[in-house]
Image (cartoon, rainbow, N blue to C red; front, side):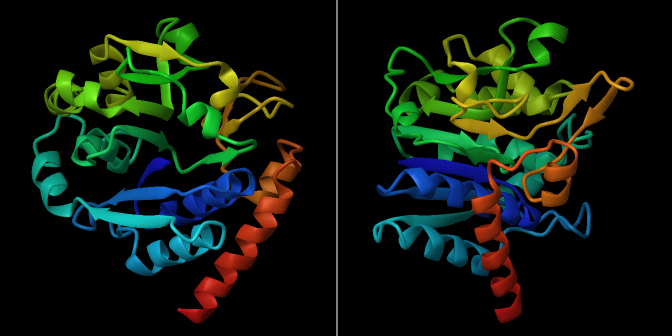
Amino acid sequence: MNILFCGNSRAFDGILIALLSIIKYYKGELVIYIMTANLQNMREDYAPVSWQQARLLEDVISCVCRESRVFLIDKTNVFRAELAGWANRDTVYTPYSMLRLYADDILVNKLLYLDADVVVCDDIERLYNMDISEFELAGVRDFLGRWFIEYNYMNTGVLLFNMPECRRSKLFKRARRMCCDRKMFFPDQTSLNRLCKRKFFLPEKYNEQKRYRPDTVIQHFCKSIRIFPYIHTVNIKPWEIEKLHSIYKLHAHDGILEQYERIKNAFYINL
């Protein structure tokens, strides 16, 4: 199973939680690609995922399947050079969200992309093995976007890519060009939505963006809107454990989060 994460060193906590949740249910071989870049020329805290972090993640997943591997892909040079001329260089989101638009560099037939703020709640093998041979990608409608943008606007936090079709259509290359030329609020997500003509829409349980449900397979902790006691946004991440408990009243992932805290604390002690 080929899985892609993207981000800087601060994504490490989320990737660790995601991987711990994946191997809770899936015991087969995992090939994890982590795409990163050093953008400290833009912000001091934009340091790349380190090789020490990648090695720890590989140690975690190889305990379940010895063949599982983590590959760290450093896109610093090409990303810095291209990002300098992009219309979407500065947005409310970090530039690391656009790293997934370089996924065409990964030479596999199928690739599951996951944001670093997801928790897997069941075996994802059925999702990965879905037949999407007639499509470029598969994903779930965006919970807010389908109301405020368009009904078929897809959330890109969980995407299953048919890579030969994506390469044939030059989807990623065209998306990068669009992000370079046209200012957008959700640049990477909107470019994929606008340019991909053959999307397969998955049930919400594969990218549950609102709340944990009994049939949830992947819970995505993205920004949401709350109505009461007043209209406001909430953006709580899996590693913010106290807030998960106090605000979301969510304890379904406590076992995973206890593992995460143990492993993370030991990692930083031994650095």
